[in-house]
Length: 367
Image (cartoon, rainbow, N blue to C red; front, side):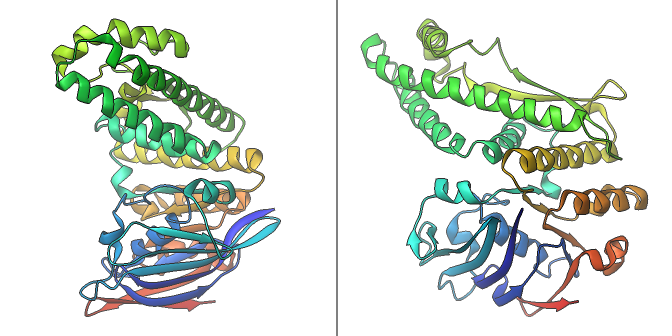
């Protein structure tokens, strides 16, 4: 069974005035000079999964300038034993709209049929920057296994915003907090449980594999204290924390205070203290483990988006990565500045050359 795009059309999307690609399930090697529009293609594919895409951009940011007419993506998605036509578009800077097989659909519905993972250069500093990025990284992994994670996260964020508003307004009457803290406790406990389940799947997929990439020991930690064991305990903790939270003007406990701690397993060195190359290799290892776990859990390997993935990999590790992708059976979309970066793939991949002239990208398919 497979998950892949056999057709992708872009209209007025970023630097692409128009492009239509006909594809098969093999990896896709995309090459061209910096600024040609390679990453824009990966961003388009990333929108075939729930969320805001690999750049986390707003719909109005994705429209081609200066026309600003709106944009549209259309793809034929093969998911397990079914084929779906997926249309994603925005008009006049409005929020994205989605149709699956000609019918209006939700992001959750898209999550049921598509699994897309990515690794982009902005993530290379994941281990040494703030916890926010690591939470987003973990939540993308979690969402790949549990599509409903997006909904429960939205419920939690909405309830927390309401509680924070009460705190900033210095509301001290406990009755105002009861309902919103109940909602936060239920959603927050679900978020924590989902993340833990995802980490167990990733750890298992790493431990079972023989790979050229180092494995990471992963732990979900809290920036302060511990996450309450269940919704009831979390609700009580929120109630007890009100006085302290009133002084801070915000909620100081909960899954929004979580962090992902990683250790290079073979060396026992925290990921944040590893070399740049080792940190990149650990990220690649986690993406591959995520793919292997999804192949078993979902029934097909995910679509992978690997932007400039060869940047910190030597030739040996690069060849090993290509072998692992092909063994996984994933339609991996990879970018690089020249075709020589994909020599080891040979005819195991399909090749796209992207050029740019006067702000407009062009795509040429090579056999």
